[in-house]
Structure formats: C-alpha cells, structure tokens
Image: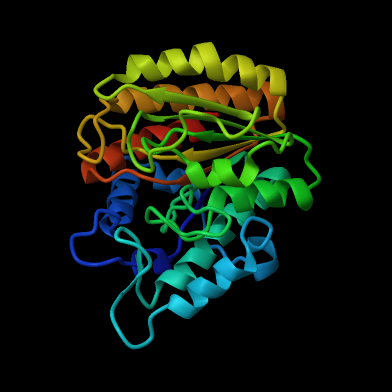
Length: 307
C-alpha cells in the first residue's frame, strides 16, 4: 500500500496574505484525491515531529536555534527574507514536515508500505545546511536521506528533484557525498540562480531553457538521468516533487502538462522497481497553480498506487 503523510498543522502554516505557498495548495490536493477516489486507496498517516538530533544531521545547531528564536510569539509574521516568513505554526509545521519524511522512510524500508507520498508544508529543498530560504526551513528530503543512510544503514540513496527551481539546499548539503546521487531538472536562470555548474561529481543537473515543453524534460531523463541512475544502483529513491513547471503555473516559464508529470512519475516508479524493490518516498515541494497542482499530484499519486 502507498502511505500518505499529512497533518492538520500543515494547513495552519502561513507566510502572509496572497503568498503563493498557501494552505490552499494542500486543500486542493486533498479535495482532488478524494474526488478521484484515490484517497480511499491510501494509508493516511500523521507524523510526529522530527527530533532535533535527526534535524541536525542535515542542519547546523545555529540554523535550528535561529528558527526557534525567530518563531513569532507577539506578531502575526516574522520575515527571514523577502520570500520566507514564519507565523506561530510554522516552526511546528517544519518539524512535522521533517518528521513525515523520516516516518515515510521508516515505513518503506521496513516493508510496512510499498512507497509513500508526503503532502507537507513547508517545502524543503531550498533550505541549506545553515540557511532557510525560498519558502523552506528544514530540508525534508535531505533529512530523510541522512535517516536512511545513518539509521537504516543504506549505502546508496538516489535523490530526484523535478521542481522548476533548482534544489540548491539539497545539493549544498550532499555535494561530493558519494553515498548520494542527486539528479535534477529546473529552469535555467530562475531562482535561486544556481545549478548550472554542479557542486560535485554526484550531481546530475539539467537546466532547461525557458519556454521549453515536457519533451525537453523527457530527453533529460532518458539521456542523462537514467544512465547515471542505472550505474549508481540506488537502494532507495527519494523525490523532491515540485509541480511548478506546469504551463498553467506563472512562477516559471516551462510548459509541462499533466501528462508530463504522469510520465516522469511512472519512470521513477520503474527505477525503484528495477533497483530497490520499489522503495520510494516522495515529498511535496513547489506548485502554485492550484488546479494544475492538484491534477499533477493526482497523476503522481496514481503512479505510486499502481507500482
């Protein structure tokens, strides 16, 4: 069965009126999965907060202390940068999002679930070892990868990042760590304006030209990702699943469609089946065109259910 991690606190985290990373994103996903009959097929789970010792595998103590100190107690929001702010629920939501990622790894690696999707907020892949940024506070996928390596004793973990924005935080954390292969696509010269030059030999970064469609992504996967993945032979697939390359999403200039998300999801399910007994954990990153996000996540979850 596919595990689906969610929590009521994820809906309470907000960064201000009209902010694109809003609770409506999760409402839309839940509503769509329910209407399509997919939610009834999922093993719905609530995570616990990740302990600090788990967070600190990926982040510095100064980073954690800063978030705790910044968490607002006397005002609605406190900004960490022009894009990223905290309300009174953000800190707990961040601990729970990281907790969802590690709980999903536990369920998949112990055989309780075939695979898992974490419908979490805040997202995580921009959070660097010492810096929150880009709507992200803790790097959920990096924390999950360290948990798989350090607690479950895996030797090779694959991280896939198909968000339209480069997963700079994940790359910074794992650059040159040969236990991890990271493959990614993102729009060239888009926030955070990194990724064109990989930080380590374990990074397969494929910047895509603005206004390119899903065919460019499919070529990147077939020509660059899959050969590197097959050589690496991962024992677990972790996905930073961003849905903001959709042609309906004005956060980018790429032109992916619902069917492109279905295709890439199916490819990654096949990778997991080929190399690691289907063991796969996916965690929500971007996607801000609400209806397109919900439909695309529906295709993604359907691929996991069909694995």
